[in-house]
Length: 312
Image (cartoon, rainbow, N blue to C red; front, side, top):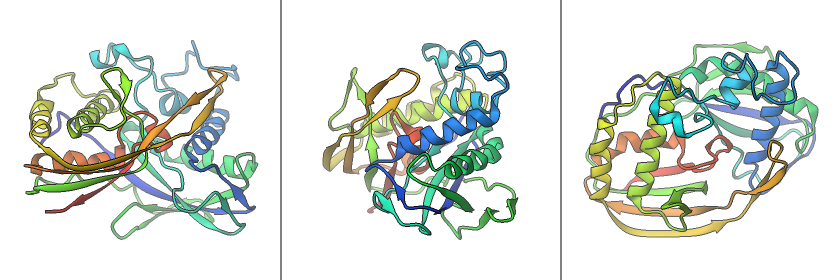
């Protein structure tokens, strides 16, 4: 499989250490998204305006590019229907550490940077450090180090010397290999529309279609891809031929408060697993990429993250 242009992905693992007991909700995606966004805006904003609407600096502002990513219809026809382009990052909250961590505990915060988002690592470090120093989001913490996600987990950044130790790694998409059976397990809530409504049990082809659309929109917004869609056709046709042999889904209910909208927004999703079989070799590279990009809405809060296991 070949993509229609360059697609740069850097997968990192922030290691954080609590300085106070840290209280977190059952799903902390909105907590870290909200805290990081608040302090990134304070660090980056040049005008002090209460919101970003109409700001002449938005297209060049770190906060604007990362967090209020403007959709430029002149850049891509695909983006015309959306007020914002997909953000060039995925920030996944801690998943298994529990809702209360004692002082001195370390925990992980996976971060994926996409395309031009790779140029803003310093802003993520400063924003998360400022969030942690404030103690306003459950307790105080600090960035101890940043590791390369997966592999040998090479150390990228030292939080004590505040030095970047090596260039940012680039994730390499694997080549096509034979596979007849896989299992996908969603470890964070999947929130996905199908035929105008949030699905209670998505088909495999629906998952692939959503992932391929997400990759294409990210490529258009952050890598300058053309709108040409032909590369997607063989992937979608391959997904249609795959058979689901087992699946189990359960609803995960949670909500977040939107400062922009001034209301509480339901973010209910699904957790569960799916096993499928068929000629999956053509789909494996894009499914491996999807482990870092996630699927569905709320991906900047870590939603739609899955584990992928090749069974045969």
